[in-house]
Image (cartoon, rainbow, N blue to C red; front, side, top):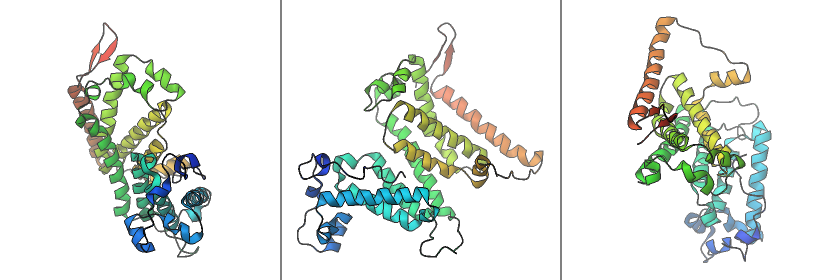
Length: 320
């Protein structure tokens, strides 16, 4: 359902003939063959003249097809198929090619990359028939989903520091973020009223979740991966509550589900099976490793951000 965030009918004032950024200007019909044009700019809109449609009508048709396909995949399990995801990816790529600045945001690129991985991960039923048994994904393609999530979160944290922005280095970015973002939510007003020390602590927590925790995506210990999953979901939920960033945060949550396994999801659904215990000796090693990771996170966070409690002022002080 996340795959077609556009309205079924694009507003003529945006991409129409007299719109702000007419989509037809991105399609230069120079007499080249269809495949040559498709190679230069991969979009299905090149088929418009062959179907008797102009660019504006072609865009509306692509969006309507994508909306119907994604809604069908949401409701019907047989449509959650590799071929359907391939069609959705092709439709969004077609619109992306002519979307110009309105579709050149990082969430549009993320949606295309996630959609391509969905084609590789999803089962292939439509060509095999209804009698074919479901085959689990292979480890390599599903690992690529985790790798995409890691790149997204780790880079999101690192870029805040490499930008050399004094507000991120000074931990004061959130003192004005909530009131200056594009589309704040009603709860953003309440978040803005929090004391400055809390805003600074929130930036510290953001750095920890985005930089320190992502390496845990690849550890073999299930409990550490679950810890990383809930940390990412918590961050995205807080962002959704205080700001509107299109489907960006929802898509990040979807990617975070790659950190889960059948056992944990089964517990959510009420039919999970716990693994047989191998005794204290078998469980002691993973438990010590888990405690060591938590201890290192707390120690290095306290050290690198100078965390200390000011008992007189009753707040937590921090600095980079």
